[in-house]
Length: 487
Image (cartoon, rainbow, N blue to C red; front, side, top):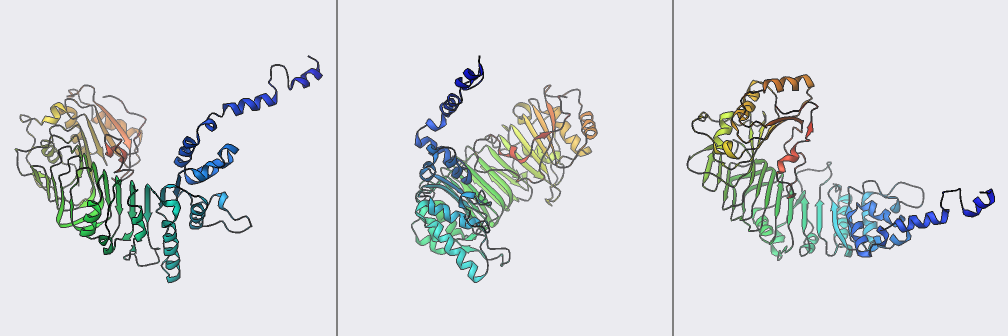
């Protein structure tokens, strides 16, 4: 083909004209052809900065951000977005000013508002300025019909940490629309009880390090008519009574409950009771017929009652009662104690998965219990127990003997995971495989797996995530060593 003809055709032989290629690209943008309501949903699911940046995609997207339901996350805005930078030279705007700009520029609605990382300055001038700004945010028309609110009110570390910021009364204006709420580092004033509390849609509630009386807690709790999950973190209370027909999951982390203890009753839908660092001598769970996930239990809890089953220091007081609903159980001991674990398993006949944590800092003595009698088998070892996770495994003689017992006795066992929080070489792993070799395993297909995990029991645990069958799985990184095989 002559050169002139090539130029006339818009390119070399076999290539498409440039204009046609651009048309094909435009035609391939199928996302922009979606209805506005769907594009708005996509934008609302993005982090705040990314949602604003969609305006640069194409002319079609420019008006969508201002009308899309917004997700405002202060952590995501810790580096201010260029859209809100000052046009003149100078310092970048603060995170607080960016939030104010978003609420001013965006007419709403805002579906999620998260500012858990904004400190309140202790000086008189700074305190008043921060308080006024927070109040302006919470009163913003953009937050009408808010569905998720996550707010912490920590006073700067320069101040007396025993003081709590009083929770603004404006938080309660979202009561009729909230579905998810996380509130922390504040004082629940007594005036709250004077208002007619009602949270008709609230399903997930977290209270972290709040100053709240028993009366106010029970007033707030009783106003939650469809609550599914409750997480209490770093809270101290003299007594706690929880009764709800809708609760599915209850979690505690680093909480203290006084001499009168914790009472959970008439929770007909309760499936999970997770006690991470619960300092409470007495725990009573009555009428929870669906309870399937429990723990970690430890000897620090002097009295634990689950239905008709009563433990004193994790030693059962009766041999005639059991809990058949629990499928996943976590236990925490100071040191390896096979007899103590077996004595507990006897009363959970349908147990399918066991987590055992050894924590030398627990400082809780375990009283002597009877030794295991092979002529009196444990039912879950015979028919149900399939998975075991040993956390903080050291591989000494006691640990190996503990693991070998289950390899020799658990007849339907599929897997034992050994979770390590120290760097271990392949030679050590190979030695462990050799020590755990047994010729007469009760379950021929049982596997062993060494994984690296966190030394902290609370790592990555989400009390509100009901999608996982075992919430304790998230406590480990689950990074296998190179040598892991069937034995």
